[in-house]
Amino acid sequence: MKCVIYKGDRKQDTYLYIEREGDFSRVPEALLKMLGVLEWVMALELTPERTLVQADPEQVRRQLTEQGYYLQMPPQDDSILQ
Image (tube, rainbow, N blue to C red; front, side, top):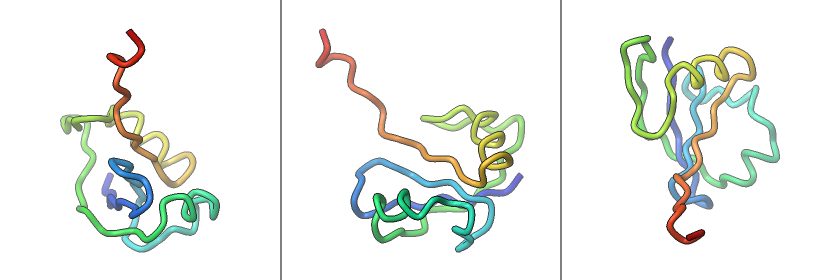
């Protein structure tokens, strides 16, 4: 499965994965507004063998298929809770 990754100018370390470049038709308008101006980051093939640093590739593929996008949020810093 191919996907394209964008980052917004309003939410640092937040990435939006979609199925086709420039096709935001399945992304909620409120989410697009929250992210701000989107900048293309990369395109990649999500194969079963691919690993992603901050996301489960199977979950990304499933959400792309079911809802048309995947939102990768910044990792939480659990050290501030201790």
